[in-house]
Length: 404
Image (cartoon, rainbow, N blue to C red):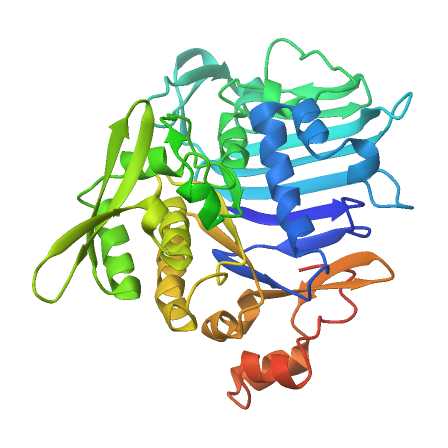
């Protein structure tokens, strides 16, 4: 689980904007407040790990487009807690020469939770995870290498390093952690790798899609048909059909057909007289397609660390929000769920402590929990979240310095 992310000067975010993340978290704020910027911090981290810093920066227009106007260096810190242990990754990016960028600093740690036993000659056998060979090390090196690896760099200089026999090479345009595929850092890397923020649009799902074996599902659902094809029909597939059946009313099955290198999703609609008609994705409504895309993202295997859905209520009938929320809640037991939303119906279904208020003043974005007075009203059932939104708007807690 990603426990917390702290960012400075990333897009519109101010200094030390911290967001605590639970199993299910929703970001709420007016248009242009910076909700997408908060979500993109997490996607940026995942892109840095999966594709490299240069690709992540280039996709976002470079340092001048990514850094807040008038702000200092971009700084990001992510706190992770998973069954294998707890870790931190943080880094700063600033200007280089000729409007380029460079890594100013970076630090990574991971504290393993592993059983170990004494054996002969003061050697320690550290039990690895599933499929890993036990690691043998002496007692003196145990805590600074296998159980508690860490590194710290200042620019291109590696100032401290424990965890492997050979110190990694530092470069001004590269981050170190994505290069550290040794077992000691692998759990942290894999946790950060498994983040995906989705902006699912029906028109993108209607387009013919080539067979694509890449996972996870891509940001806009460019490989949705292939991910849908890979679902386990007896588990995830049944959940998808059940959800669509509740929402649409007459869908009772789906299938994917490969034609000329393209994957064609189809859904079976059954009428009251028992007649069944298969409709391709191009024939389905916007609401049906978007629901199918969102549900596929939630049900994909293997489960991701965090799944973000931007404005899930778009094109979805308000009466279906409750069903969709049930799937968000269920999916949060497998992956963290992060939502950006304007839907008062959806916010009423969330616990008030799961909501983060995103506000933008003087072109600077801050994030905080809901104001304590408003939280108290909701918890005492004196008002609902939607009533507060319509009457006075949700207010962020004061005195938090942007902290979640």
